[in-house]
Each structure stands twice: as structure tokens, then as C-alpha cells.
Length: 211
Length: 391
Image 1 (tube, one colour):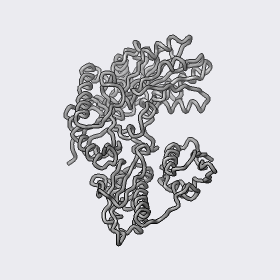
Image 2 (image 1 turned 60 degrees about the vertical axis):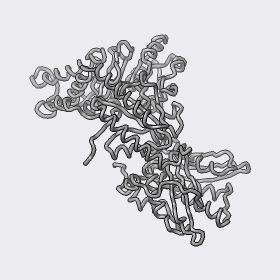
Image 3 (image 1 turned 180 degrees about the horizontal axis):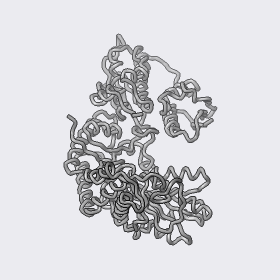
Image 4 (image 1 turned 30 degrees about the vertical axis):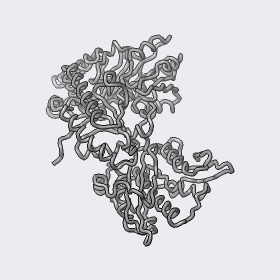
């Protein structure tokens, strides 16, 4: 079957909304990295009284679907309260775009991630909120929730590919995944898992074992 | 209205030349017959096929009998590599290829490994040249076949085939040399005898010939067994139906290309230089992938654009009806950056922003100029959107 972008994706890719940088933003966050294939930065201006997003801009080093998703997500978030904006999902973004090819789902996750990270940053910095960001099973699972299995465009936790998550006293992490060793997406997944978990500053060795 | 097409992706495929189609037409319509002995219709077709065979043989400096028609480059690779490995298995089950070989070579060896064959995959330097010292060391008493890609499809590197065959000749036993020359044929001169090649594959549709046709050159006396079975019509290694129109078309495409070969190569050099000069003059932060212009295939250029991603470039060029290829992970089905760019020491970022331009005889100066005009704006716009490279 032909893999193609919807007209809506093309439209947002050709003329993306909210591109750029906000000087002195109330919050900003960057997700992904050039090594990972895509990198996305989101900048926010938030009304201090109503906590509504008054201005939002993004910059993308990414493919057409990455740019289009960032465009639609920043549209969706404009004028929303930060509580409302947190609830925007990548499924919602993909639906708004008239669907995305499964292989492209992982590119759309970044925009949602970056928005949520920027909101978290805002909550920490301006609202004094505290978050449990330690290296534990729950937080590792939250990160694995964003790792998309490219073949069908669904994350590896929902697909129940993750069978075990363990952290030892030296902060080494063991993850057991149900996947064949010749799976064409294995390398991509390993790369993505390492990238995601690399965010924990005190993490030791990451071991991914296939079962 | 759709803008005039500029197609710079002959390494993938190319437009069927109108004069080739014209030569094929009678064989798609009135002359639908098969080759055969004695009858007027059978011998007419047989002679037409022999003409094609002779034209192709002349272009490679080989004998017409050494030309076998296949259904394409991949088919020729399979027939040769498996056929030679199987036929010589009593002598040895060891092969040598490279990490930068084309997938149409690598996947065959991967399949053979599952059958108990063993191989060495020799490395290449940043410009894509094979490490010949490693080749010398990899040769064993049971090495049967050495198979490489003649012109690297990603980097445009022309391998030093004469050097390779000298190394094989210095071994104390006979080792066959196979070259996948699909990207080399009609883009660089190939004198098979001088180069010392035993078997070589070419593909019809990469130089304005028809799709679904290829050629295996096989040196007389090569020990090989058939890997496909059926009625022998032209050659026992490729049984079954004979694609007469495509054989005629391929012969015609070779005749046209070979008639003005030097002139066409000169034209490729000029187009390549124009494209290179204009990009480097007008677009900052770019880098050439593969050897310098005077060394590489003249019909090939690969350039990385910093801070932007290749699929986005490719899509924006496509909106303007300009067609190119990228090594970005985003455009690959496995989400992995191109393996050759990675194996030859580039970063993910260099690979993601890489664009390949390959030529055929319909590429013009005007097309190249329009490409750079559009490309300059595309890169500017994507860099405006990018968080990278802002100092």
C-alpha cells in the first residue's frame, strides 16, 4: 500500500503555524536530539493569573510529519490553560492531521513530549511544584511509554512488549523486551530507549535483553 | 499547473527514452513472437536478440555468448552469486564482500550464511574506498567468490577493480571476482577484460532503458550451476519466458549511450561541476560525501546540509516537481540512517541531512540551475524552522 501524507499534513508542513522562538519565554523545553533523527524545541508565554498559554512557538529539526505535528499541537495549545494543554495527546494530533503513517508516529510524539516538558518546567519554576524525577520503575515506564514500535506506530508499553524493568543498587537498568533479534526495528528501539533513559542524570548501564 | 519535472535519481530508475520505446514497439505489437530455429518468425526474433547481445558485449569488451539476459540487476546478482557459490561448494564455502556493498549483494550473502556459507565483510574508508589490505588478509584457501559494488550507489566511489583483481590473481588458487556494476554501467568506462572481472551485473532502467531487464556477463569457463529451473530458451541459467521487447529496448539504450559515450561522460562531468559549484557558492554549511569530483562517478553527487533533515528537503523539492534521494532515517522504512554513510564514519546528523543527486541523459543545465534555485530557498526555509545552527 502506498504510504503517503494526508493533505492536512502537507498543508501544515508547507505553511507551519507558530514557527520561531519566544524571547524571554516563561518556559521552554527541547526533546529528541540530532542523533535520534528529530529535535524539537517548544517555547511558552503563560498568563500568570489564568495560567493560559498566551503564546507558543516551536523550532524543529525534523521531517515533514514532525513539523506538521508541532504546527497542529501548538495550534491546539494556544489559549488553553496549562491543565488543558497537558491533556493533548499525540493520538489527538494525529487525528487532527487526518492520520499519520504508523512509521511516522514516533516523530509526532516529540511535539507532545516537548509541550508537556515545557509545561512541567513552568510548573516547577513558576508554581513551585515538585515532581518525583528519580530513577525508579515508574519513571522508567513513563519514558518507555513514549518509545514507539515503528512497524505499527504504537508504544512498546501499550503493546506489552516490555516484560520486566529492574533497577539495581548501582542504578544499572535492565529491561526485558519481547522481540526477535532480527526484527527490523530493533536497532531503532535500542537507540530510542537509550536516548530516553539517558535523561536520568544518575543512570548507570542500560541493558536491553530480548526474550 | 505542475512545474516542469527535474528528475535527479537515475540510481533508482530513469525515464524510458522515446527512441528506445520506438525500437521496442514492434516487439510489443506485431512482432510478438519467440525466438526459435528455422521458421521466419522465430529466426527474426533470434537475430534481433543476437543484435542486442552483440551491442552489449561490445560495450563491455566481451563475447556476445557471455551476455545473459535476466529480469534485472538483482536477478543477475542472485544467479551469479548463488550459482558460483553452489557450484564450487566442494572447494570452499567462503566469500568476501564489503560493508558498503549494495543491499542487492548483501542480502544474498546473508541468505547464504543461513545455509552454512561464511564470509568476510571488508571495511571502507570515509570516501567509500575498500580497504585492500583487509581484502588481502581475508583471502583463505576456501575462498570461492569475491563480490563488490563497482560504483557505490550512496557515495559515488569508483572501486579500484584492477587492483582488486591483481590481489585475487596473486592468491594461490582461483577466486572468482563478481562486480555489481548497475550504477557504474554507462556512467564510467568498463573494459571487463582489462579489469579482470569474471562476472558482472547491469540493469536496463538506470540509463534510460526499460524496466524488468538486466544482464549478467559471465566469463566463459566460469564454474556455475543454475539456481532457477524450467525450459531453456536462451540460456540455462535463466530459464522461462523471454522478455523480447525489453531485450530489444536494452540493446537500443546501450547502442544510443555507447555511440556518444565520451561526449555523454563529458556532459555528466559538466552537470556535476555546475551542481557542485552552485550549491557550494550559494548554500553555507554543506559538505560533500564521497570522493572529490575528479575521482568519483561523474553522474553522482551526494551532499549533506547541516541543521536540516533530508526527508523534509526531499518533500519540499517534490512539491516543485524536482526529484532527489536522501539518506535520512526518516525516509527509511526501518527508521535507520543510511548504513553506508554510517559505516564510512559520518554522524547521524550528517546522514539525516544528506541528499543524493544522480543523472541520466535527460538531465540538462537548465534543470540543474532550477534545482539549486529551489534548493537554496528550501534549505533557507528549513533552517529558519530549525533549532540547530543558530550560533
